[in-house]
Length: 344
Image (cartoon, rainbow, N blue to C red; front, side, top):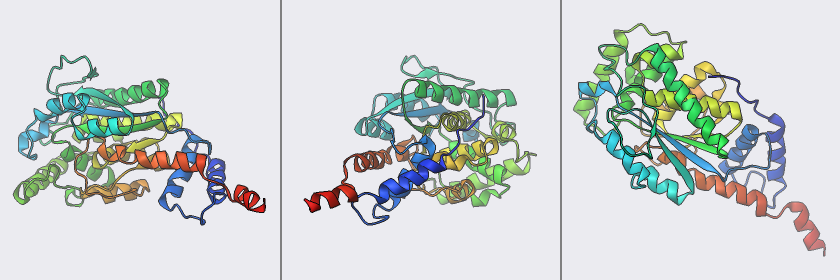
C-alpha cells in the first residue's frame, strides 16, 4: 500500500473563494455550502468540480466481541443486511438509488459464506477474535484489511468515480471503533463508548466495562495504527482506513459517514497526519466518541440528524449538497454579467 497523499491546492481554494464571491449573492451568502465548495476545490485541485460519479464502498465484517453481549442485535444481521443493501432495501440501499450513487458491498470478514455473486469476496477471516481475551486479528490480517480497502477504492476511482463514500455493516463494531479511538488518543473508554444499536443503560454500563477491561489488559502502541487495528479493530474498519488513504493519494473527495468511519480516519491519521484536509465529514452521530474523533481530525460535521444507522447513510445524505454546489456554480449569474445586463 503506497502512501503518497495528493497535495491540497491552496490556489484552487483561493480561486474558489473568488468564484463564489463573484456570484450574484451576498458575500458568504451560501454559508456552509461555500466552505464545502472551497474544501472540495482544494482536494480536486480545481474550481471546475466533478462530483457526479459517486460510489459508496460498504465494507462488512463480524466481531468476536459480541460474545460479551455488548450489542442488542444478533450477529447474523451482518450477513442479512449485506444482502439487503444490494437489494436496495436498507437505508443506504434506498438512499444510494435516490441520489444516483453506485453501491458496492465488500465482504472483508463476515461469519457467513455468501453465494450471492453481487457480494465482492475479499474475506480475510470469518469475523475477528474476541478482543477482550486476545488480539482481534494478527498484524498480517490487519495489513490485509488495509490493502483490501485501498484496492477497492482505487478500483472505484479507475472505473470513473469522482466521489467516494464509505460505510460499513458489522454487528458489534461500535465496540471496536470505541476501543480504536481510545487506544489511538490515549483516552479512557468512558470518553468514547456510546450506545451503538441503542442499547439499554444496563448493557451500556456492561459494554463500557468490557472495553475498558480489554484496554487495561493490553499494551497498545498508540503511534502504530497496525498495532491498534490488530489488537482491538475490525476488518471493515481497517478496509475503510485503506480506502481513505487511496482517495487521499488520488485527490478524490471521500465522504465519511459517522462514528465507525471516524475511527477508521483516526487510524489513517497515523499514516497521514493531515488526513482531515483530504476528507469530508458528513454528520455528527449520537455516539460519545464522535466529537473526540472529529476534534482530533480537525473536522467539522456538516449536519446532525441524530443518525445511528451507519451503512454509509449519513454520507449519502450529503450528496444533494454536492448537487447544489455544482448547479450553483454552473448556473448562477455573476455580478459582472448582472451589471452588463442592467446596463443594457
